[in-house]
Length: 396
Ligand SMILES: *Cc1c(COP(=O)(O)O)cnc(C)c1O
Image (tube, rainbow, N blue to C red; front, top):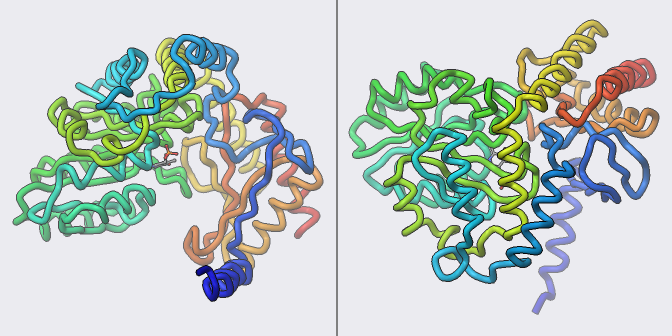
């Protein structure tokens, strides 16, 4: 009996629309790349997580095609029944080697990796100390565990210490943080976090989804960037961003942690294996990333060029080196201005960027989040900056 529920849902949907929060999806009629076509227009894409441009890389696509032919379309099983093939093991080993961790367990997504982690290791006697800006999947994963929860202000080490003190009587504690905060493109201060973890006997958990593959000299993520690779206990990440962008996630950690996750982690035990073609494609992406700096170098050049040109043009960018480059539109009028500029850029210059405002970011901190990619050429970056300038002139 759907009945009254229909009217209630219609009213809720209207509330979402009235608040300006309704999310319309643009339908792409092309592969994910620097250039995309949509049902309405052709656009230069500056809002994908395709950091290394591997989403349509010919080598990655070919490896997926070969995997499809060799290993079939799907597994129709969870891993522990009959869903583990040689490539699944191989990808786990590749990830462990690349990240310098003892072992790795694959999930259907990083959302699942985070959702399936905390409950396994932390119960009512334990403490989870979490950055307030952590990704939704960490928040949900923490909710699923019975552990005591402590939250600290974003990257605030004084507050983190306060929470560690408050959690001191717990049996076991973990500090959980995103490696990169995706609305700001800022890094978690891992050396200080690791110092505090040592001081208070806590483990360190880092979700490096917005870093793995391209942050750090060898692309090994924020632990490499900060030189703390041997001090992070748990690394989670996604295959759905820089590592080819298909789907899948992982948890890399000490052997015992991964062993226990294989026994107890619910999204691993009760959800289907990652499709073989995705696994073989992801292995190819990872091999490419591990064997060459070329794409990281292009990404870095594009990020620096964009920052330089935008700063010269008088735009207000958050400081930083991450290819997430937020262009700020502060103040009461910022949300409207950011939205109008983004619309103008797509309509008039064919440059696709996304504006974010409250409640996704704090009030008065509206922004257009630009994401650079190794798929962009220098000309693409210049076109993007010109589009910003033209839109600012037109919109005021
Ligand atoms: C994108 C992202 C995820 C989700 O990854 P999926 O594999 O798409 O589920 C999790 N955590 C962080 C920090 C992310 O940026």
